[in-house]
Length: 338
Image 1: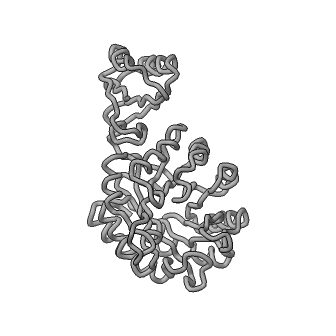
Image 2: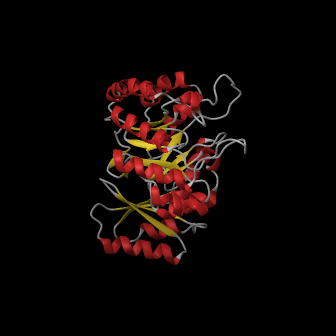
Image 3: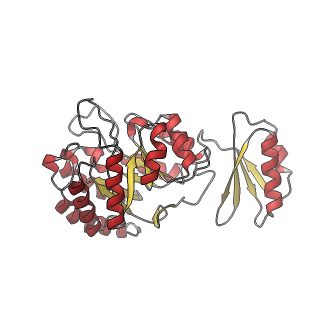
């Protein structure tokens, strides 16, 4: 349910509504838009009489039921697009951000070479995995904290904000000390304890869609983060598992357009995992921007043939530099600003 306050409603009237919600063991999430102030009501059991009860409070314009199971991230709650601020980089509402870097941090030379190259080409953030969930226990699973320290070193030199994955609730505090954006990978999209833990940090969270997740399940996972009082959620479509075997996954651009309609959160596209083939990444990156994505996250490696993970889907630094002007051109064509 949402409570729409009258334009110019005094803070005392808003506080009165919030206090009444507390009496019912409910939480009120305050959303201040350009044209209206809205209170999102969430809790285990909303009394059926509450809608009429709050409608008579001073300063209340109307009370409405949210039809979607995800309440706080729903477009019904907030008409305006959410903008997530990452150290001055605005994600959402007309921007087009480019996050680039290797699948895994492998060495100081590798991450520094990549960071310098993607920064020179115009990337706005640096991605790199220090902790890697891998299908096989015998493959490279990341450098751990040593990798996080190298990412921090790259940020210090290049100024690029750091996006890196956190895999367990116990690692959140550690990763948060180094990262600017906490990434939840596809395999952890429904790790609800992890979602709640990153939600409590208040930091920006990049939430990737699960391998076989529906759009509703994806948005409900975002709701877990938002329910902890953290509105700084960035969605990422990274391809889903279908019957098709010619590509690693099927990049679902339907999901981008539909998610933008159903939620106010920014949406990115990951064409690297979405295709699994480096030569398809440029076209699908451009298609993602054209479909309405607020940016892309692309794997880049200085020597993809020798990458310890995901080399087949990684662009070389040269190929990434060649792609960036095309991204800028498509972004401009659909009214987005790099």
